[in-house]
Length: 436
Image: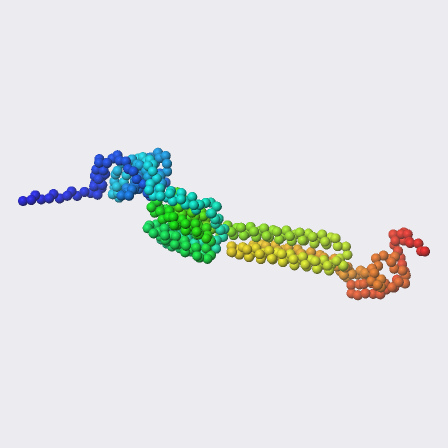
């Protein structure tokens, strides 16, 4: 008769994890491992988290702040390293992990070496030359975005553009941003924007990730497609510490997708501020010109001796100056408004008020000129004497007894005859010319 098979021991989960950890510790620890870094991160706690991998497998690693503080280099994805530490089980998840106590470089890693070879080749061909890079337009008509529709990077970029330049249209050319075939899709998405009219800058963006996640942006065909762009390309791939071949080929590299959006378009309030400044300068220049013309008018008024002859010409000249000034100001305002219309603003209303006040000053000056009209003097009871031929009589010595003279009053003329000539003391003392 067969003996019964003993029932297996029933383990609590935590106890099983601890038992496995003890077995690993007894069998392997301490352990040294050689592999390529992938998915390296170092949060604010100072601890480091990453994976070590090779062609046949990978293992999760944690390096606590005390050990990380002893490093003499900054680990990067794709680097080949040798680490020493202890294998264990992270019981909350039941994950096998390697607690790293020391790390040293062992080489660049296969992917990183491939990255460096392609970088050196394209750099030698001149694809990274600074002279080839183009400056971004100050006021793009439209912005193209190449990224995945499901990526957080798209949300970040669109949010930044809506906040800064809501008036600029944004065209999204969707594509996969990682995985097999992603590089070809990205290149095709870029070419789709190359044929669109009205796009003045293109943003190539995606969020951060390991060197494997970002590998599509290290493709040679994609690099050449970026260089062929008819408009500037801004690369915002990964985090600030991530570099790809696409970054070197782009006209400008941004540390993050949001930064790429911010570099591509100046905030609207900056241009509105520039518009207000330009409007203020234009207003000041117009007012200075009007003040100068008003001063010229005042000086001309002071030089007038007999306004009866000059009044008409000065009025015509004043009218011409007023029309020229008005045309100059309005023409300048129209030109400035046309140039800055795209910024959704207009010259300050204050300019119109100042122009109205200046117009009032000119009208008051015109009124003062009118007060100098000789006809107003005649209306106060004075008369203008002249000979019959129209020559003005300004002295009693010019009229002899019996001579006919004409007196011009405010409401008409009188023909008079001189009965006697009575000269004042000053006139009588003057020597009279000898009669031949």
